[in-house]
Length: 178
Image (cartoon, rainbow, N blue to C red):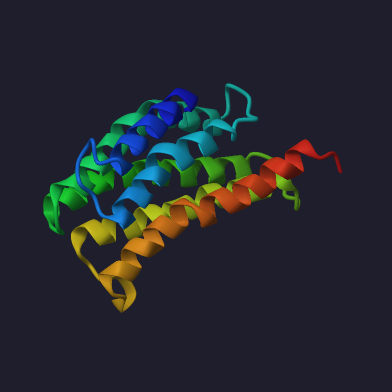
């Protein structure tokens, strides 16, 4: 994920300078979440044995994330809402759903307690919501009756604040002994 994230930094930099495509500010912000925040965040998650279901899901995400991030970029580049951008966005939703399963498997694979790892699992669950709102935005569906700008902003929010916030809290709790 770190190599994917480093590539993402360069790619998003090129997007902001408009060397690659011409996206709106919201689309650029979502690209930053997809290409940089999520891969770097996922690179900090593992603390599993190689034989657990969570580890297998993590390994699948390592391979799927770059391809699905490219599909998400193509979805953003395709133009306005319709089936093709939504289908490409659905590939990214597959990654976010994988993140949700990773969080669920991690949660179920250890004894229940309030600790830092619970924050990491919650972060992995929140990014799924971002994937749902992203597909909705690319389909042109006004989820819950909200304006399309709000739908897109919600997708951006769940890729940044709702994913990175609990993840950073969990990683800080991991680093600070109780």
